[in-house]
Image (tube, rainbow, N blue to C red):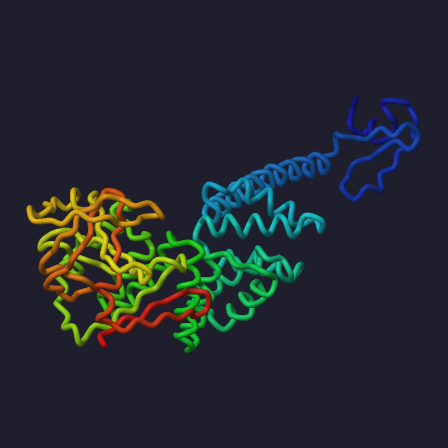
Length: 379
């Protein structure tokens, strides 16, 4: 059919009622709705529209993949999970839980600024959310925002929180805000809650070493390991280092042992029973007169029982044990060399210093913010 015929009559119904008012050039039949697709302007419009749609599709795909790249760059292996949680957080009922999970992912990625962003959202929505307060406070402290961290952490404690890592960061906050004594109290409390927490132990050890208090540092390690560093490679390697094995001798008049206890019962003093042997620990026992020594310790350090010994009885856990009494010469205790230390040794004997040794010292015990201490110095 010719183009002019198409414009005058409808090829579908034969009607001449053709509307040509379309600004894009296409005519249509008002009776049956037929549209003239042969208009050059209409064809051009459709081609242009198709061209634009192709480019919009390409731009959309590029935007999608760019967004995926950004998500992967920020969230790494958690990008898909984070994307889902971000969508989930758009709904009010899931906002708190989704932002909590996003903050937890930030913690896993060690991205503290990210943690602050999402835990802040939770706290703004739920000011009494303990988990969000704890994590927000630690993240603020971890980025040295001490003044902002303090009230957040105190809000967490006011709700009954006492997690060891939060306790440590509160102590660190107090220390950095000019209250070092209070900060140290909280470091010890953190270790009391979890003696394996390395941040607290390393921080306290560094403070001891800055004061050149080797005996205090060694007593802290004794408290952390419950007197058995040989069971934990990290601490045994540290005790085998030169800074501890080659410590300078201390005169008796200079003895000033600061000994913490993390269980409120045992207070440990470092000893070297013979030259060039490993450091081992004796606990202080003011309820016993004798100094006792485990045969297992002697075997480990290859100490021989002298030929001249005295057979004695010693009570261990309310049971009398057969033991031998003898003298160890030149024993190093807390950096001081004891010329002659009389010990009672048996297989079940604990390593303890009793009053026969302790009577030459002044011993003071006190409790500072939930942690017990002994101060031992010469009379």
